[in-house]
Length: 436
Length: 122
Image (cartoon, rainbow over all chains, first blue to last red; front, top):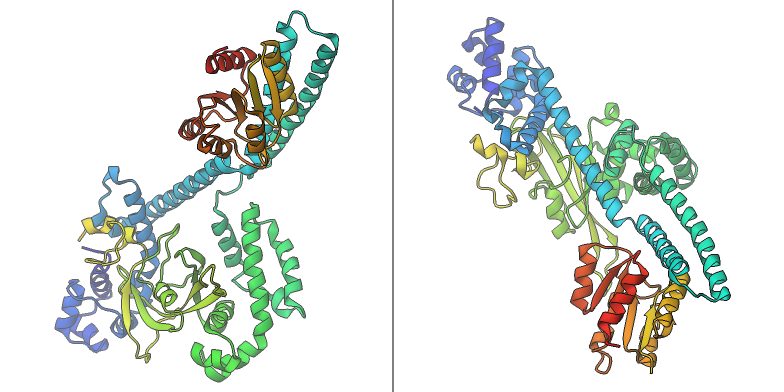
């Protein structure tokens, strides 16, 4: 049994607990009783309208049937199982485990995430020790000074007949060097003590920035309302800097906010709302009306509050496929570290920057929740003879909606937890393949 | 006639100390304190032995050694490399570019004397 088929069992359990007969439910959902029977026995995958009708008839949230809330937990459990294969976790019973022991399951998932983030910061600390130029320079200075002192001191001790002027000179050198050594040692101590606060959460700079952005709802009224948005950036940064541990994350936030301010300068909140009122949530029409490119429009849309326009997600990547920005919505998972699915349209548009894409996406293993994805690319540096243009890919994520006659595609989150079979772009085996 | 040694090192007090012990040992010591024009000094001094620090302002000791080994008239000159980092990586790098000996700071004077004597038969 897999995550994606258990939905039938849920429908059956719910129906029986409510004392409804199969024929009644089938009628309410406008499907045949035999079809419902197949669904209940997990022989047919369902989604979309049928799922909504069944949920309505059973008086439950559709996500309760479609395991929307549990999907994240189950992916996390799969990831945890994959990271520690030696324990041979019963992957085929993940869903059952999550269902029967939600607290324990949550604990396993959080522990795994914690381990991952601690491992990552350990890695970055190791890198820091090995590659930090400041540390290397300080150590070099200390060792050089020690070398000079050792050599000079042993001359003074070992040389039996030494001219007074030489002797004087070497004493002076030792005096100088010992002062330098003391300073160098103090500088090292200061530097090492100024490292990341030991009590703080271990987060990568990217995670820190995303946490701060998420808390702010990806929206900054102080910048929107300022006469000079760029000038307001500094004030917002000051307000947030206490929440950021590292210089790296502060610099990354600065880049995000500068972009935000520049975008707000192009399309004010007022003009965006006016355009939305006229055109609805149709990025093509909005971009035309506002006279801006799709990427800029995507960035502006992603700052709108959810209660105003519904959930809007945005994923930004660079030429290397690294995710620079990720604001996700229900039904679309992004990898926690790196290595997003190569099938995401955001990677396709990088190859053909002139041709934006609009497609319904379903992530394998989450068959019942889909999203509407729109992808466009933007040149961030102009092409020169020395270096071709650098491009960034943008993918706007909206809840799936009816009436859009557009292609749909199945993609993954990341290979490790992706059940897609015979996938041409697979990079590493899936831990789910043991299930299938 | 005394053997000539060229010491390329940027730390003045190390220069002074090594110059002193090598002079006492009968060497003719010349010094140079940066990487930029170290090759000029190497060509100009025509030393019997070169003591070369890895971390020099302007240019790395490894690069200078590569130039020495590539130069027709200088390529046979023995070179003793000094480094503040004792990692295997540095040692391998030194061997690869053609160092005859490799010493890690902080070294003792006796080590230096032993090394230079073994590199140039006096």
